[in-house]
Image (cartoon, chains in turn brown, orange):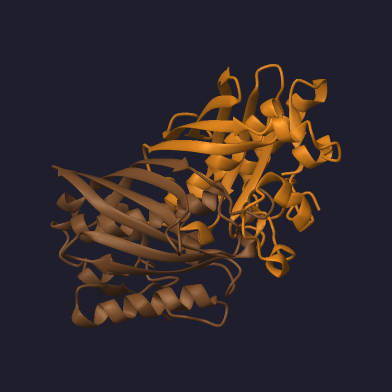
Length: 207
Length: 207
């Protein structure tokens, strides 16, 4: 089930933004990115190709599910991403539910970091294939009220060999409030990627 | 219910570390920090004292629960923190469950950031009263396998007026593998804190 489609927990702001970006996607300049809970349920042998010395616990991996998709509808991370290929840019519209609380009434810094890492990671993934976040640097400017809708705007700033440098900001729907800014450095693992013929683009885009 | 106490989902490593730190707590040099799901269910009027212009959604706040405590036993964040007052240091023992997956077989960067922010935030809270994370800078050195146990070691490095500078690292139980390093800058809001007589130490320590 594609969890990036509207559900009854989405606020009016969230639906409005979704509709706006779906409209922008009609001419192909933007692309809606689907999102699944357990697209990544891969065989442990496949995982070990990437990190051969990792001590993986076989029976636990079978239960594994994508972190931001593991809350009941409306309680956790509600989000949808759209990508603009020409501009190397991804926009994430995000409504953070009541189970993401940090300070009373506001989103936990870790919940904000999770959506930043997901959005920057997706932008890097599309630009560079399989990537790993090496550095994430976040400036929290203002706390984000629980259950509000925000827009995360991310882009690739620079590519240096295997390193991708990205940045993003989080703003209110009316763009008047800047909540956070972040940069990331991602390492591209495409040397592994090109050597493994069974990894399909479907796998890459299924985060 | 104190969620930082052992439960059947804890691995042998997790229990062993917990017992070691409980032993160290007997002479008072270390202190076990309890953790609750909804200690922070405060009246919306109280919240508005801190951020008067925030647009808070009243009916949603009543459902609010602390982000890292909202998974079923063993599936998400299993952790316990211990504080050493003399050294301004907090240790967090952390077992990340199968619902925290990012890349297949490994913890999501956001889940790692969540535990880093929680541990650094707790260290800052004890050192400086009510604080807000202003910057979080994480270097991800190696991916953390899902369901493994790691140790987060955090400390206050410097205090400059209202600013607290902290750092932490994440290592394997045997300390041989360095998974991540991070620094944070936290803003101390004690000017608000001292003006509000109803905020008790119990509130401060109940994260």
